[in-house]
Length: 284
Image (tube, one colour):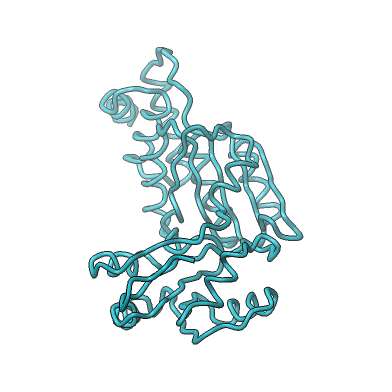
């Protein structure tokens, strides 16, 4: 365990198992048992984890999305007062699409040491089992909840060459896959990974159109990590105005705005946006 300076607190970011408690390390056990204070996204879940690990927890407080802004100053006061604080979220690393970023920034600005007990990550686990290129990738977190914002984001990402990794909730995954297939094309390879490391772990692989249809027919449940192949190198294919207009219209038919549809087509085929826009405008 990291050694504290005299009178100075220590913030430890503890990586929690994704679902299989056997993935917990000895360092995680020590980080929880030896802390003065544990801040947990879900206090019931961390107590259950502690029981499974056979350890006794110190004082525990909640630290989740709903109270993160209010509780950060309280936890910072603990740290500057010399408290050894361990932060743990429900699964994976704190601050990676989970509470923690505010506290890390506050601790750094207050010159409080920050360290980590590395643990499982849904991002790299899903990437590894997806079968998609992993030499270069980017993590996009949760897509926007609002349909228009989500479609606009996907239009911006359509030309991204790196493999993309997203988190998504079960009740939005079908709409997200539909919008991805419209923006990236139905044949873009993807992998829907659910319940990683758990009893009902499942990985569905296929084109985005196929995954979208599958999610509509058999909605996946549990924690979902979605991996999508990056855009292929644009082929130097000359497309006439009528074909470009038809491609834009196809995307608009899925609910995309004309602007987002133009962006998606331009990105997919490596064409100047003004050329695609002119074609769509001319077809009106």
